Every structure is written in structure tokens, then in C-alpha cells.
Length: 149
Image (tube, rainbow, N blue to C red; front, side):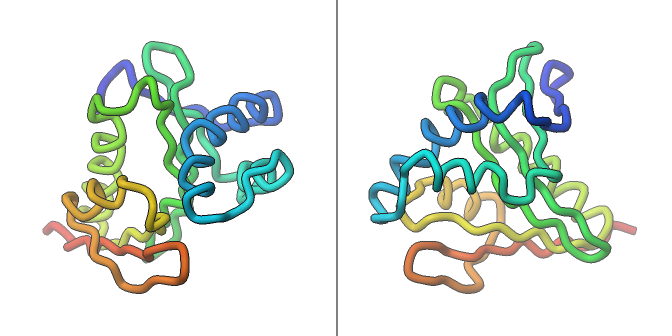
């Protein structure tokens, strides 16, 4: 992991940052999918499983969100958002690779969903995620970790 990249548990003081981040990163995809983009809908998405939210910092500046749920047999990436100004630098890939490496060491499966209009699905496929289902708007993807001995 990049020593200048770290996580801090999100709290109520972070909600304005997270609302702004979500609007920048996700609303264009929601618009293309004809899903609500109003403030209330966006706030509900920010608050979804908020206890699992971590702010991603690069050089002590907040640049994103990782919302992750770890259970005994599975790791679910609930939300991963990187500020558009920081995208294209491999940060999302690095974060996901760390999660996948951890899953491989413990034999866990990693799951996530991605909107069909979001090109991040190309990154997920390149990292080894497979589509295991879909609905009208999203693909459901999975990475099966092989336990290392």
C-alpha cells in the first residue's frame, strides 16, 4: 500500500464531503441510467451502511470513499469512489488489489455491484471479477479468492 494513502472511519462531519464526492462520481451514471440524482436520493446513498464508510486520504487530503463489509467468508465492496481529479492514477486499482490480496490470503470471496453505465466495470473485469448476475441497472460481480497456504 502506498504510504501516503490511508483510511479513516467516516463520521457526521464528513457528510458534506461525501455528498459532493457522490454527486461528482456517481450522478452522471445515475443520470444515464434514469435513476434519481436529487439531493435526498444522493444523501440516502451516502448514509447507506454509513458505519462501514472510510474516507480515503492521499497525502493527508480526502480523495475518496471506501465502504466495505467484511464477514467471515466474504468481503463486499459496497461503494468505492475516487474524486474525478484523482482518477486515472491507479488509486482505485491499488485499493482493490489490496482487498483482493487480502481475500486470496483468507480464501474469501469479494463481491460488488456496478452500474451498467459505469466504465469501472472494465477495471473490475481486468482484476478478475466475473459477472454473476444483473438487474435492469447493475451488474453483480464476484472475485473468488484462493486461500494461500
